[in-house]
Image (cartoon, rainbow, N blue to C red):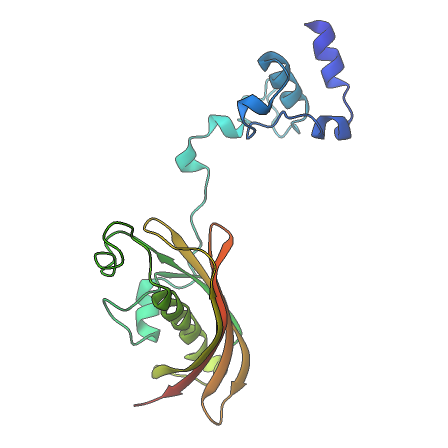
Length: 219
């Protein structure tokens, strides 16, 4: 084993990268014996602990899955959202804002659950979020940008004035987290009109996108 260990530790970075040794590979794709894989993996780790045996530097495999993924940040919670948007149950479709650039854009999430009131009818045997409600949720994120002092807005009602180039790329199902980004492209304060571009993602993949034209008003 000493010869094996020395040869593995002497690999160049490019040689190491070409070997299927990462812990995230399928076991069937790894050609090295388990002991050799472990030695090579350890040789590529950057020491970040003063402990000589690396006890304070656990690998990803040692971390329980429920602790590996950080929560989304909170820029606006549901209470702040309710102060800005006029929508209420069952039509408030934004749960949290995770990024906000005043007067320009917002990123928010909608946690899609089987308890959402549209699933019993759409569809009983295959719960899929209706595309029109994805568009509505994105428009509400746009409203969080529009109804702010940075763009001359206030807590007024806002409406669709038009939608264009909307495409639905993949179905959104119960259990998904819909991440929506809305960006203000053009604002006409005099007429209370705004053109926005929106994209919605699940797991980093686009599921819906389009252009939105919205209007503000007091009636």
